[in-house]
Image (cartoon, rainbow, N blue to C red):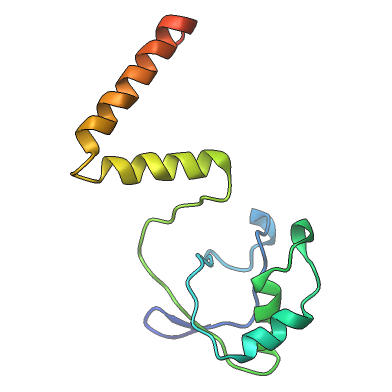
Amino acid sequence: KLIEEDIYLVDDLIEKPKEEEAPSNLAIVGRYLFTPKIFEKLKITPPGKGGEIQLTDAIKLLLEEEVVYALKIDAKVYDTGTPLGYLTTLVEFALNRKDIRDEFLKFLEDVVNRYIQQTGKA
Protein backbone atom coordinates (compact mmCIF):
# COMPACT_ATOMS: atom_id res chain seq x y z
CA LYS A 1 0.00 0.00 0.00
CA LEU A 2 1.45 3.36 -1.09
CA ILE A 3 1.60 5.70 1.90
CA GLU A 4 3.61 8.52 0.35
CA GLU A 5 5.73 9.00 -2.73
CA ASP A 6 7.84 5.83 -3.23
CA ILE A 7 7.15 4.56 0.31
CA TYR A 8 4.94 1.52 0.77
CA LEU A 9 3.46 -0.30 3.71
CA VAL A 10 4.25 -3.99 3.14
CA ASP A 11 1.37 -6.36 3.75
CA ASP A 12 2.64 -9.49 1.99
CA LEU A 13 5.65 -10.93 0.15
CA ILE A 14 6.17 -13.91 -2.11
CA GLU A 15 9.59 -15.48 -2.73
CA LYS A 16 10.24 -15.66 -6.48
CA PRO A 17 6.60 -15.87 -7.57
CA LYS A 18 5.56 -16.86 -11.05
CA GLU A 19 4.47 -13.77 -12.96
CA GLU A 20 0.80 -14.72 -12.68
CA GLU A 21 1.15 -15.19 -8.88
CA ALA A 22 2.86 -11.86 -8.21
CA PRO A 23 0.72 -9.58 -6.04
CA SER A 24 2.26 -6.44 -7.60
CA ASN A 25 4.88 -5.28 -10.08
CA LEU A 26 7.36 -4.49 -7.30
CA ALA A 27 10.33 -6.66 -6.38
CA ILE A 28 12.56 -7.06 -3.35
CA VAL A 29 16.19 -6.54 -4.32
CA GLY A 30 18.03 -7.43 -1.15
CA ARG A 31 18.71 -4.27 0.84
CA TYR A 32 17.03 -4.20 4.24
CA LEU A 33 16.84 -2.40 7.56
CA PHE A 34 15.02 -4.34 10.29
CA THR A 35 14.63 -4.25 14.01
CA PRO A 36 16.53 -7.01 15.85
CA LYS A 37 13.26 -8.98 16.02
CA ILE A 38 14.01 -10.30 12.50
CA PHE A 39 16.62 -12.61 14.08
CA GLU A 40 13.98 -14.16 16.34
CA LYS A 41 11.82 -14.76 13.26
CA LEU A 42 14.69 -16.30 11.30
CA LYS A 43 15.26 -18.79 14.13
CA ILE A 44 11.70 -20.09 13.83
CA THR A 45 11.37 -19.87 10.04
CA PRO A 46 11.09 -23.33 8.46
CA PRO A 47 12.92 -24.07 5.21
CA GLY A 48 10.99 -22.83 2.17
CA LYS A 49 11.70 -22.80 -1.56
CA GLY A 50 14.79 -24.83 -2.41
CA GLY A 51 14.97 -26.20 1.14
CA GLU A 52 16.53 -22.92 2.32
CA ILE A 53 15.40 -20.61 5.08
CA GLN A 54 14.04 -17.65 3.16
CA LEU A 55 14.33 -14.14 4.54
CA THR A 56 11.02 -13.42 2.83
CA ASP A 57 9.32 -16.00 5.07
CA ALA A 58 10.87 -14.44 8.16
CA ILE A 59 9.64 -11.01 7.03
CA LYS A 60 6.14 -12.46 6.73
CA LEU A 61 6.39 -13.60 10.36
CA LEU A 62 7.68 -10.18 11.34
CA LEU A 63 4.64 -8.60 9.68
CA GLU A 64 2.48 -10.32 12.28
CA GLU A 65 4.07 -8.12 14.99
CA GLU A 66 5.62 -5.09 13.31
CA VAL A 67 5.04 -2.69 10.48
CA VAL A 68 7.40 -3.15 7.53
CA TYR A 69 7.99 -0.39 4.99
CA ALA A 70 9.44 -0.54 1.51
CA LEU A 71 11.16 2.19 -0.48
CA LYS A 72 10.74 2.09 -4.24
CA ILE A 73 14.00 2.80 -6.04
CA ASP A 74 14.65 3.53 -9.68
CA ALA A 75 17.79 1.56 -10.43
CA LYS A 76 19.03 -1.29 -12.55
CA VAL A 77 18.83 -4.59 -10.69
CA TYR A 78 21.43 -7.30 -11.18
CA ASP A 79 20.53 -10.92 -10.48
CA THR A 80 23.64 -12.87 -9.56
CA GLY A 81 21.64 -15.90 -8.44
CA THR A 82 22.21 -17.79 -11.69
CA PRO A 83 25.47 -18.48 -13.55
CA LEU A 84 24.38 -16.35 -16.54
CA GLY A 85 23.17 -13.52 -14.32
CA TYR A 86 26.43 -13.57 -12.37
CA LEU A 87 28.57 -13.49 -15.51
CA THR A 88 26.59 -10.74 -17.25
CA THR A 89 26.75 -8.64 -14.09
CA LEU A 90 30.54 -9.06 -13.90
CA VAL A 91 30.95 -8.11 -17.55
CA GLU A 92 28.78 -4.99 -17.19
CA PHE A 93 30.60 -3.87 -14.07
CA ALA A 94 34.01 -4.51 -15.64
CA LEU A 95 33.10 -2.52 -18.74
CA ASN A 96 31.99 0.39 -16.55
CA ARG A 97 35.36 0.57 -14.77
CA LYS A 98 37.65 3.08 -16.47
CA ASP A 99 40.74 1.47 -14.95
CA ILE A 100 40.20 -1.94 -16.62
CA ARG A 101 37.66 -1.30 -19.41
CA ASP A 102 40.04 -1.20 -22.37
CA GLU A 103 42.05 -4.24 -21.33
CA PHE A 104 38.91 -6.22 -20.47
CA LEU A 105 37.21 -5.27 -23.74
CA LYS A 106 40.28 -6.48 -25.65
CA PHE A 107 40.12 -9.74 -23.70
CA LEU A 108 36.44 -10.19 -24.58
CA GLU A 109 37.13 -9.47 -28.26
CA ASP A 110 39.92 -12.07 -28.28
CA VAL A 111 37.69 -14.68 -26.61
CA VAL A 112 34.84 -14.06 -29.05
CA ASN A 113 37.16 -14.13 -32.08
CA ARG A 114 38.73 -17.44 -30.93
CA TYR A 115 35.26 -18.90 -30.39
CA ILE A 116 34.17 -17.86 -33.91
CA GLN A 117 37.35 -19.33 -35.42
CA GLN A 118 36.94 -22.61 -33.54
CA THR A 119 33.23 -23.09 -34.10
CA GLY A 120 32.40 -21.06 -37.20
CA LYS A 121 29.50 -19.55 -35.22
CA ALA A 122 29.07 -15.85 -34.69
